[in-house]
Image (cartoon, rainbow, N blue to C red):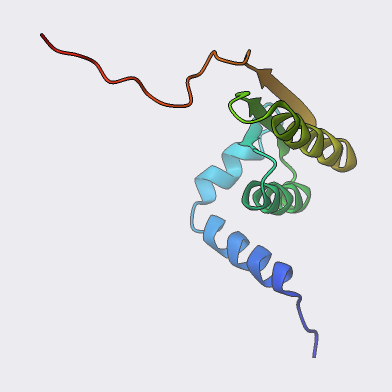
Length: 116
């Protein structure tokens, strides 16, 4: 009996879900199509990236990564997340697109509007 690891079970479940959409599979397998996945560097998005990377190898589609550094948190924390994503992209051999915002560009707390 061949036992699957937990990640293998998740991967097989993901494949079975995608098989419900054969037109989507056919579309992403088009050599000119590129599937982009937004990755933050956190555990959830890194697992999603790994699963989609495995799927791209099995189903022969192009995958690339997008990550955004909003610079809302401490500089070291934001920078560390980008480094993690860059290293993983390099390890997987995937293109990576990084968008960096200047600190303060995006406010961490929304301002309330006053109505007169």
